[in-house]
Image 1 (spheres, rainbow, N blue to C red):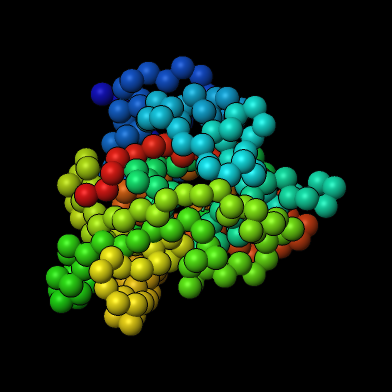
Image 2 (tube, rainbow, N blue to C red):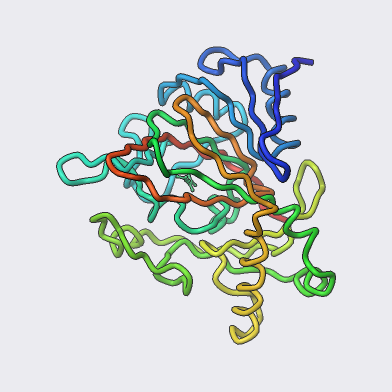
Length: 288
Ligand SMILES: O=C(O)CCC(=O)C(=O)O
């Protein structure tokens, strides 16, 4: 078994891996060790990587098929599996998705899909001196620390997950960065219904599975009851004791497990800081 140099970064989740290079051929033993670190720490930061978009796609594919986002905006022209996140402006247009389209609300990736992402990777090509952190929350802990009565209340309930922020009471876009929001959401995507308590398909642990970005309602429950319950769960899941906040370094390749975490683009990039990242997302199973 390949052993990795893994150092925990925070109590609730997050670990750093040094001394590996995933740009070229990666053997099955190393993939196995990275998978084990992901299951143990939920967010892993592989330091000092230099990956072309093609190399990131090749490495990400070792963990499953990749998901291409349904709207064409912000996709890499040669490798559409790569979503570009950037605050750089070229001819008055952003060179990639800004936080309004990638992360300014707490979320778990692609839960509006029937089979949400199992995990995603972000590779930092440029980072700002100040601001632009990403925060992750451990949703196993969020579930386990709910009052017993709330746990009992949500066990068996299902939330309705919606891509279109215009249909989300918590989702108003305040700064679209010049993107036509109506056009962006004109791609029709069927809503998905997922259990609010999810069992991780590998570890068997239960986690809270609803975030403010995508979960807008509870199946079969009147909004007068559902919205306060969602508010309570959303407030609970971002207790600082569940969170690791990552300050990016150039070369970081962060891989997180979407089956037990939520994350947020914290924002606050101080001009003239430029933050430019490439993201890939790996297909997952139907939550149960
Ligand atoms: O930009 C960030 O910090 C987070 C991006 C994000 O939420 C995502 O890629 O899903």
